[in-house]
Image (cartoon, rainbow, N blue to C red; front, top):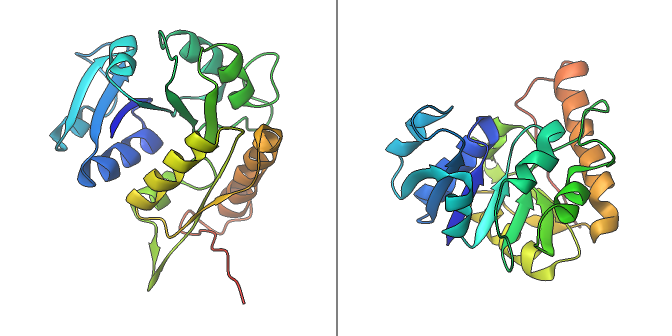
Length: 205
């Protein structure tokens, strides 16, 4: 799969590494190809760097992992996204998000041509994306959005990154819920002092 990653920090970098290791073609999209955070990602196999719109044009799937307040500007910088799947890994935290929107996915839908926008990879820390294994099991990931095609791809990419399962929690009406779930992890890990090495697993009986 050809994947554009916009946002080469902790989350984007961890997923770029995992997906490159799984054999996907990674196109990092950056503002300055000669100076960007995460240049070491080019040491990964199957990984190249391009200006943002060029990385998008070369890819089938786009991961957005930039700070939430710039979601509108980032969406507008992607170029033509018609027919492409956009996976939103951003979160509005403590009110800091795109102006006029309660969540980042709605801002992306309003500022791109893509109808296949889903949220995923936003409910846990980047450390769990780099290593989702806990003892003898892997933790789970979650996704939502109206696009069945987008959720199918997000689910496959979650498993390619090492997560045990990726559960569908609903449509676009669950965008805010999944962002609140991310805050639940942040609250436990940071505010309540549990530390970053915690993750969620859905158990059944």
